[in-house]
Image 1 (cartoon, rainbow, N blue to C red):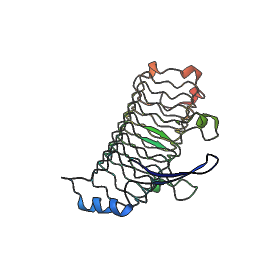
Image 2: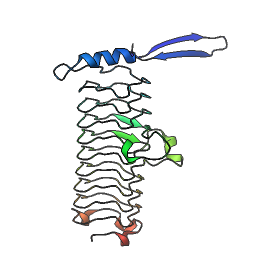
Image 3: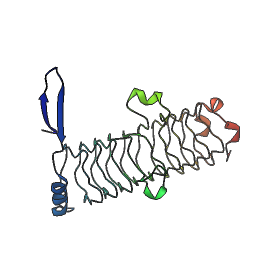
Image 4: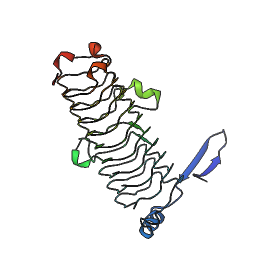
Length: 262
Protein backbone atom coordinates (compact mmCIF):
# COMPACT_ATOMS: atom_id res chain seq x y z
CA UNK A 1 0.00 0.00 0.00
CA UNK A 2 1.16 3.54 -0.68
CA UNK A 3 1.51 4.41 2.97
CA UNK A 4 1.88 1.85 5.73
CA UNK A 5 -0.42 3.05 8.48
CA UNK A 6 -0.46 1.32 11.82
CA UNK A 7 -3.38 2.54 13.85
CA UNK A 8 -4.56 1.61 17.31
CA UNK A 9 -8.00 2.72 18.37
CA UNK A 10 -7.94 3.86 21.98
CA UNK A 11 -10.88 4.04 24.30
CA UNK A 12 -12.94 7.17 23.75
CA UNK A 13 -12.46 7.05 19.99
CA UNK A 14 -8.93 8.51 19.80
CA UNK A 15 -6.38 7.01 17.37
CA UNK A 16 -2.62 7.14 16.93
CA UNK A 17 -0.89 6.40 13.64
CA UNK A 18 2.65 5.79 12.47
CA UNK A 19 3.35 6.58 8.84
CA UNK A 20 6.27 5.20 6.85
CA UNK A 21 7.48 5.71 3.28
CA UNK A 22 7.48 2.83 0.81
CA UNK A 23 11.30 2.77 0.77
CA UNK A 24 14.15 3.56 3.13
CA UNK A 25 16.81 6.09 2.16
CA UNK A 26 19.25 3.18 1.78
CA UNK A 27 16.92 1.38 -0.64
CA UNK A 28 16.44 4.51 -2.74
CA UNK A 29 20.20 5.14 -2.82
CA UNK A 30 20.93 1.55 -3.86
CA UNK A 31 18.33 1.62 -6.63
CA UNK A 32 19.76 4.86 -8.01
CA UNK A 33 23.33 3.58 -7.80
CA UNK A 34 22.42 0.54 -9.90
CA UNK A 35 20.43 2.56 -12.46
CA UNK A 36 21.63 4.29 -15.60
CA UNK A 37 20.24 6.26 -18.54
CA UNK A 38 19.26 3.07 -20.37
CA UNK A 39 17.43 1.65 -17.36
CA UNK A 40 16.46 4.43 -14.93
CA UNK A 41 15.06 3.68 -11.50
CA UNK A 42 11.27 3.73 -11.35
CA UNK A 43 9.55 5.03 -8.20
CA UNK A 44 6.34 6.07 -9.94
CA UNK A 45 3.35 6.23 -7.62
CA UNK A 46 5.47 5.48 -4.57
CA UNK A 47 5.68 7.29 -1.25
CA UNK A 48 9.08 8.87 -0.63
CA UNK A 49 7.69 11.46 1.74
CA UNK A 50 9.88 12.89 4.52
CA UNK A 51 12.98 10.97 3.37
CA UNK A 52 16.44 12.55 3.44
CA UNK A 53 17.35 12.38 -0.26
CA UNK A 54 19.77 15.31 -0.18
CA UNK A 55 22.55 15.26 -2.74
CA UNK A 56 21.34 12.18 -4.60
CA UNK A 57 21.73 11.88 -8.37
CA UNK A 58 18.42 10.53 -9.65
CA UNK A 59 19.90 9.76 -13.09
CA UNK A 60 16.69 10.58 -14.98
CA UNK A 61 14.53 8.39 -12.72
CA UNK A 62 10.82 7.87 -13.30
CA UNK A 63 8.94 9.62 -10.50
CA UNK A 64 5.47 9.97 -11.99
CA UNK A 65 2.91 10.73 -9.28
CA UNK A 66 5.47 10.17 -6.54
CA UNK A 67 4.85 11.52 -3.03
CA UNK A 68 7.81 13.67 -1.99
CA UNK A 69 5.94 15.68 0.63
CA UNK A 70 8.39 16.89 3.26
CA UNK A 71 11.35 15.17 1.58
CA UNK A 72 14.82 16.74 1.74
CA UNK A 73 16.03 17.21 -1.84
CA UNK A 74 18.79 19.70 -1.04
CA UNK A 75 21.38 19.61 -3.80
CA UNK A 76 19.63 16.68 -5.49
CA UNK A 77 20.21 16.21 -9.22
CA UNK A 78 16.77 15.73 -10.73
CA UNK A 79 17.58 16.84 -14.26
CA UNK A 80 15.65 14.89 -16.88
CA UNK A 81 13.50 13.06 -14.33
CA UNK A 82 9.79 12.53 -14.94
CA UNK A 83 7.97 14.09 -11.97
CA UNK A 84 4.62 14.49 -13.73
CA UNK A 85 1.86 14.72 -11.14
CA UNK A 86 4.34 14.49 -8.27
CA UNK A 87 3.78 16.23 -4.94
CA UNK A 88 6.74 18.17 -3.60
CA UNK A 89 4.78 20.13 -1.02
CA UNK A 90 6.82 21.27 1.99
CA UNK A 91 9.90 19.63 0.50
CA UNK A 92 13.37 21.16 0.87
CA UNK A 93 14.71 22.05 -2.56
CA UNK A 94 17.74 24.14 -1.64
CA UNK A 95 20.15 24.07 -4.63
CA UNK A 96 18.09 21.29 -6.25
CA UNK A 97 18.53 20.96 -10.02
CA UNK A 98 15.38 20.19 -12.06
CA UNK A 99 16.89 21.14 -15.44
CA UNK A 100 14.80 19.66 -18.29
CA UNK A 101 12.68 17.65 -15.83
CA UNK A 102 9.01 16.89 -16.46
CA UNK A 103 6.77 18.43 -13.81
CA UNK A 104 3.42 18.67 -15.59
CA UNK A 105 0.56 19.01 -13.07
CA UNK A 106 2.94 18.56 -10.15
CA UNK A 107 2.61 20.64 -6.97
CA UNK A 108 5.30 22.54 -5.08
CA UNK A 109 3.46 24.15 -2.17
CA UNK A 110 5.32 25.91 0.64
CA UNK A 111 8.76 24.44 -0.10
CA UNK A 112 11.92 25.36 1.82
CA UNK A 113 14.56 27.02 -0.36
CA UNK A 114 17.03 28.64 1.97
CA UNK A 115 19.21 27.44 4.82
CA UNK A 116 18.43 30.60 6.82
CA UNK A 117 15.56 33.06 6.94
CA UNK A 118 17.42 35.25 4.46
CA UNK A 119 16.93 34.63 0.73
CA UNK A 120 20.20 33.62 -0.94
CA UNK A 121 20.25 33.49 -4.75
CA UNK A 122 22.97 30.82 -4.68
CA UNK A 123 20.59 28.42 -2.93
CA UNK A 124 17.58 28.75 -5.24
CA UNK A 125 16.56 25.73 -7.36
CA UNK A 126 16.92 25.50 -11.14
CA UNK A 127 14.02 24.59 -13.42
CA UNK A 128 15.77 25.58 -16.64
CA UNK A 129 14.00 24.12 -19.67
CA UNK A 130 11.65 22.06 -17.50
CA UNK A 131 8.22 21.00 -18.78
CA UNK A 132 5.88 22.38 -16.12
CA UNK A 133 2.50 22.87 -17.81
CA UNK A 134 -0.30 22.94 -15.27
CA UNK A 135 2.02 22.93 -12.24
CA UNK A 136 0.92 24.62 -9.02
CA UNK A 137 3.53 26.59 -7.07
CA UNK A 138 3.05 28.52 -3.84
CA UNK A 139 5.39 29.91 -1.19
CA UNK A 140 8.84 31.47 -1.22
CA UNK A 141 10.56 30.99 -4.58
CA UNK A 142 12.88 34.00 -4.71
CA UNK A 143 15.58 33.90 -7.40
CA UNK A 144 14.30 30.58 -8.81
CA UNK A 145 15.47 29.95 -12.38
CA UNK A 146 12.67 29.07 -14.85
CA UNK A 147 14.59 30.11 -17.96
CA UNK A 148 13.09 28.46 -21.05
CA UNK A 149 10.62 26.42 -18.99
CA UNK A 150 7.15 25.54 -20.30
CA UNK A 151 4.77 26.92 -17.66
CA UNK A 152 1.63 26.90 -19.80
CA UNK A 153 -1.39 27.20 -17.52
CA UNK A 154 0.78 27.14 -14.39
CA UNK A 155 -0.87 28.29 -11.17
CA UNK A 156 1.27 30.37 -8.85
CA UNK A 157 -1.17 30.47 -5.96
CA UNK A 158 -2.17 28.48 -2.89
CA UNK A 159 -4.47 25.47 -2.80
CA UNK A 160 -5.87 26.02 0.68
CA UNK A 161 -8.49 28.82 0.81
CA UNK A 162 -6.87 29.90 4.08
CA UNK A 163 -3.81 30.97 2.08
CA UNK A 164 -5.83 33.87 0.73
CA UNK A 165 -6.41 35.19 4.24
CA UNK A 166 -2.83 35.35 5.49
CA UNK A 167 -0.08 37.93 5.26
CA UNK A 168 1.87 35.38 3.19
CA UNK A 169 -0.91 34.89 0.66
CA UNK A 170 1.17 35.89 -2.35
CA UNK A 171 3.76 33.63 -3.93
CA UNK A 172 7.19 35.25 -3.73
CA UNK A 173 9.05 35.15 -7.05
CA UNK A 174 11.26 38.15 -6.36
CA UNK A 175 14.03 38.42 -8.97
CA UNK A 176 12.97 35.14 -10.61
CA UNK A 177 14.34 34.30 -14.05
CA UNK A 178 11.60 33.57 -16.63
CA UNK A 179 13.65 34.51 -19.68
CA UNK A 180 12.22 32.78 -22.76
CA UNK A 181 9.70 30.84 -20.65
CA UNK A 182 6.23 29.94 -21.90
CA UNK A 183 3.55 31.23 -19.52
CA UNK A 184 0.45 31.13 -21.72
CA UNK A 185 -2.67 31.53 -19.55
CA UNK A 186 -0.56 31.20 -16.40
CA UNK A 187 -2.03 32.51 -13.16
CA UNK A 188 0.34 34.91 -11.40
CA UNK A 189 -2.35 36.85 -9.56
CA UNK A 190 -1.01 38.86 -6.59
CA UNK A 191 2.46 37.34 -7.06
CA UNK A 192 5.52 39.24 -5.95
CA UNK A 193 7.49 39.57 -9.19
CA UNK A 194 9.52 42.67 -8.50
CA UNK A 195 12.91 42.66 -10.26
CA UNK A 196 12.01 39.44 -12.11
CA UNK A 197 12.91 39.06 -15.79
CA UNK A 198 10.52 37.88 -18.50
CA UNK A 199 12.68 38.84 -21.46
CA UNK A 200 11.34 37.13 -24.58
CA UNK A 201 8.79 35.15 -22.55
CA UNK A 202 5.29 34.24 -23.75
CA UNK A 203 2.80 35.73 -21.29
CA UNK A 204 -0.17 35.73 -23.65
CA UNK A 205 -3.41 35.47 -21.68
CA UNK A 206 -1.54 35.47 -18.35
CA UNK A 207 -3.33 36.66 -15.21
CA UNK A 208 -1.12 39.26 -13.50
CA UNK A 209 -3.88 40.98 -11.55
CA UNK A 210 -2.63 42.64 -8.39
CA UNK A 211 0.94 41.43 -8.95
CA UNK A 212 3.92 43.45 -7.78
CA UNK A 213 5.74 44.13 -11.05
CA UNK A 214 8.06 46.82 -9.72
CA UNK A 215 11.07 47.01 -12.05
CA UNK A 216 10.10 43.75 -13.71
CA UNK A 217 11.69 43.34 -17.14
CA UNK A 218 9.27 42.34 -19.94
CA UNK A 219 11.59 43.31 -22.81
CA UNK A 220 10.47 41.54 -25.99
CA UNK A 221 7.82 39.47 -24.18
CA UNK A 222 4.49 38.54 -25.77
CA UNK A 223 1.79 39.97 -23.49
CA UNK A 224 -1.15 39.62 -25.87
CA UNK A 225 -4.32 39.60 -23.77
CA UNK A 226 -2.45 39.56 -20.44
CA UNK A 227 -4.35 41.15 -17.52
CA UNK A 228 -2.52 43.62 -15.24
CA UNK A 229 -5.55 45.04 -13.43
CA UNK A 230 -4.46 46.38 -10.04
CA UNK A 231 -0.80 45.39 -10.61
CA UNK A 232 2.01 47.70 -9.56
CA UNK A 233 3.88 48.66 -12.76
CA UNK A 234 6.34 51.07 -11.14
CA UNK A 235 9.35 51.27 -13.50
CA UNK A 236 8.46 47.97 -15.20
CA UNK A 237 10.21 47.68 -18.57
CA UNK A 238 7.81 47.14 -21.52
CA UNK A 239 10.34 47.74 -24.29
CA UNK A 240 9.44 45.93 -27.53
CA UNK A 241 6.56 44.09 -25.80
CA UNK A 242 4.31 42.31 -28.30
CA UNK A 243 0.58 42.82 -28.04
CA UNK A 244 0.94 45.84 -25.74
CA UNK A 245 -2.25 47.38 -27.13
CA UNK A 246 -4.22 44.26 -26.09
CA UNK A 247 -3.06 44.20 -22.47
CA UNK A 248 -6.07 44.33 -20.15
CA UNK A 249 -6.38 46.54 -17.09
CA UNK A 250 -3.65 49.07 -17.84
CA UNK A 251 -6.00 51.90 -16.88
CA UNK A 252 -6.67 50.16 -13.55
CA UNK A 253 -3.01 49.34 -12.82
CA UNK A 254 -0.89 51.19 -10.28
CA UNK A 255 1.86 53.51 -11.52
CA UNK A 256 1.06 52.79 -15.18
CA UNK A 257 2.45 56.25 -15.94
CA UNK A 258 5.84 55.13 -14.68
CA UNK A 259 6.44 52.18 -16.99
CA UNK A 260 9.55 52.23 -19.13
CA UNK A 261 10.14 51.53 -22.81
CA UNK A 262 6.86 52.96 -24.11
